[in-house]
Length: 456
Image (cartoon, rainbow, N blue to C red):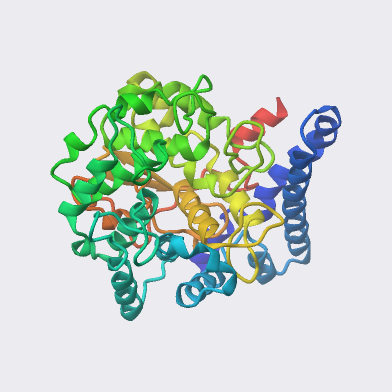
């Protein structure tokens, strides 16, 4: 017991982590904001995040002064796990009336909630899992093969992706009519390699990613013929900034960039784009003050991009040339601690649920993608794409904050992935209590490299 207490004493405290943010902000915010042409909305957002961090740091400092060890533990940056589980479970059972406008997104709501609960370590009751699987099975259009957003609705690639992901988590891919699905995907495939979101619908990289992901998870035998010319079309969506737009010639966007590169990775065609330019663009989307990611240049931080952009790094880093690969050894090429700090300090509602930015209201979408990004930031995977291995875990706050791992290409648990879908479940399941590699100075909690930079 005494040894456990000694080990806990060396864990980074909330005050030590947040002090790094607040010290930097105190010295830089006033001068930079007064001289900046940044939109008022950005200034207000930085201040809102700064206030969240400052309040938490002040409370943590007060607890240290009091010498109350129990109070100090309460002031850690803590994942409100039980509150989030309660929030998601309630909405999985009975959605409020305000969600009636999302009738065409029933598959999405199921996937967001089920995946978020998985990350939090909560397993579904057998009855709920069976009911969800039955409901999702009624959403597959027997006349076309794709899934609609609800029973008897028009098939759409986005909700098909959500339904297949959810069924994969539930272990019920056997409910999918694979021949009908293959035929429907073929009908959406365009001559230039792109994909429509639905019959006579719009064309963009979301359609490509959803189609590739579904085809991989279902191990469709017609995979190669379904995606003739697709990689080349996706490559034309890369912009001068290095990110990807929805279609050739449009603005680079975090969600589109993820869809584009994840699709190329699943197609084994990352040669169709410039990986180094994409890496540079993705890295510069992490906000200096907030620690979270923005979706586009000169836009506000948003916690959903905690996944859409952080998940690019595992896929990108395994595609770097050997001379650059050493830069990525042992960690992702973004600030994992600051991203965790943003989600934990700025995006949690005390009564449960996560939102995009402070002040905000929680919803299942941001719960799913905030937690997915938090999982990416906590877990470092090494090895090949087919046989990834967990090398280390980097946690901000307590060990209690650790989430289950998610697949960066499909965003479902690694243990659910069928063999041959891009990442294998063979050796990827996380251990029950992996060794935690916290790269912080044991005495102060500050990153020693960052302290040196600050002093210089």
